Length: 96
Image (cartoon, one colour):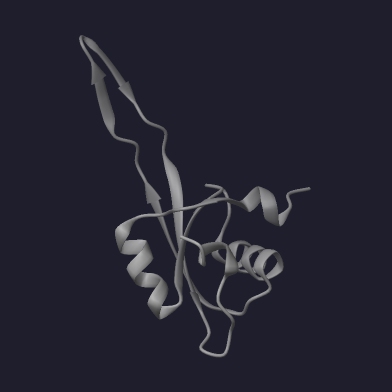
């Protein structure tokens, strides 16, 4: 059985994701097989917050070269989670 910790892989920390935290939007790398309702339940159980909306997107891996060899980074799924106004902040991002 898949747990909430299997769905949420890691947070995505970029400049744009840090600016979006002011509007209570958090960005996570999630399991590619997870749907929006599973992501919503996982965020609510792990962090104890109320989720208003979940936006997901599939990111294709970039092609990279090392000399004559050509490789490809792996594909992954990104979820942008918007919290409700009365919800508390996620403490995980407080020290960043």
